[in-house]
Amino acid sequence: MTKDSLLNNVVVPIAREGWPFIAIFSLVSLVLYVVYAPLGWVGLVLTLWCIYFFRNPDRVTPEREGLLISPADGIVQMIAEVAPPRELDMGTEPVVRVSVFMNVFDCHVNRIPCDGRVGRLVYVPGQFLNASFDKASEENERQMIRIDLETGAFVGAVQIAGLVARRIICYLEDDQTVLAGERFGLIRFGSRVDVYLPPNTVSQVIIGQKCISGETVIADLKSDEPARSGEVR
Image 1: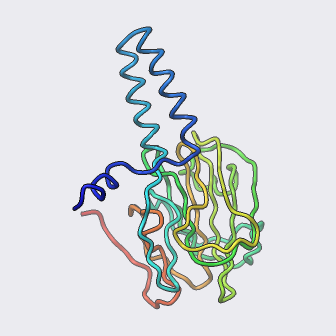
Image 2: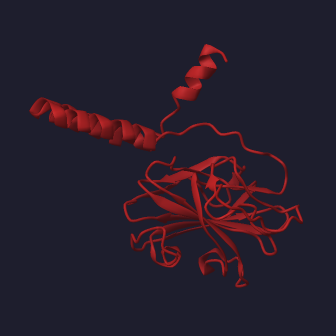
Image 3: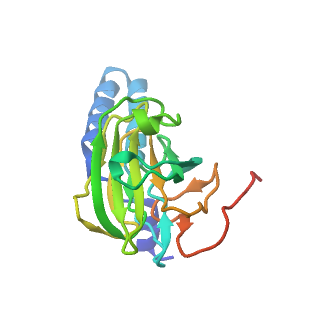
């Protein structure tokens, strides 16, 4: 491994939205150190966590047609058959919804799950319940995105604010052409992303599995493979 590649593995880019927070944490740490040195060290730890939280690493995204990629780092918390949000105009028939929960140590930069075009963008204000609750899909603040595929199918991605998260950021615009793995936004400080798969599509991830945004395949539109099962080992 070259020196440059080793450095790239250790020092990753920081999301631009994070720099104001890093500056505030750093300033507060300095003030705490001046007032009482042990508190300054606590502030330093929190500043390092803030830098870690806003990391924005590159990812290697599988490019084969038909693959749906995880839009978020985190744990697959729920897999259920539910009707898509009516705001996305994806029909009323139940489809598979994969929910990926991000804790405060996960990378919070979200990525596009598939190639396509942004068909709908809908922001819904709401509560800040614990994002691990199922009802967070309907009651929490959320940003809804429908991606239209060339085949005529739809994929829905919903950023959901959590108990601590107080800001959803989405860079997308209506009718924008997008590619799987591209960055499209982030949610600050703990949250969840739901992915609504096209009809008759099964999940290829398992509840409890760790997903890597932009890399983990959550479904394959061209595969007849049944839904996977697994166990903790």
